[in-house]
Image (cartoon, rainbow over all chains, first blue to last red; front, side):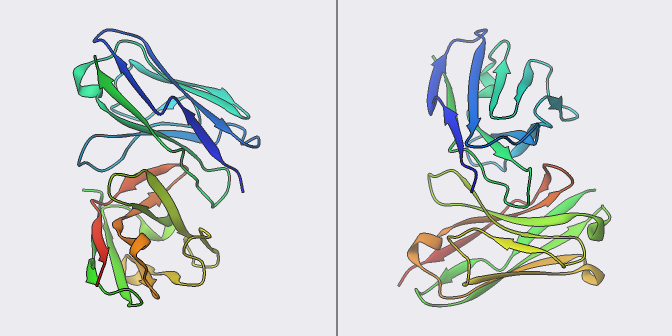
Length: 107
Length: 116
């Protein structure tokens, strides 16, 4: 089975900072990669699919890139409302494995 | 309004069984593959099961294979998860999610607690 590894597991950054989260697949998954945001006590929310396509309604400060095995989620200017845990997910097959999550906090 | 609503969670003893339901509305249910995802307290998201739109294909995570069974009734716009031989490590919030490509639609979840 393909494993998804995110880094870092947590980060603390200041408001306005550029934040980057990486996700690595143990085998190539083309661009079948999604990113989700989960705020404390809330349901996961789809941010990006197909590695770089922004879901409708998601602020443009979020962006995704990558293909194959290495992917990146970038928040161009961190806002207080972005405090959350972010998960990557592969969906190249029915087995839609998630990464372990990256917790983002404000410094 | 596009919506998924889970039900059926609760407290169950180890070794017991529970059946979760997920009611869909606001979209063409039978054109979406459906999934169950769970989240143990303080832990990350774990995909556990998939069913195709016509029920011909079903897949399970190793952690639940042989104990859980996914099914759907397209006439009732409903998804189910039959959970048998429950263990403490199955304690989690269980979400149903509709997959167009990624998981675009999520329910609010139902809590399953396995404890004596």
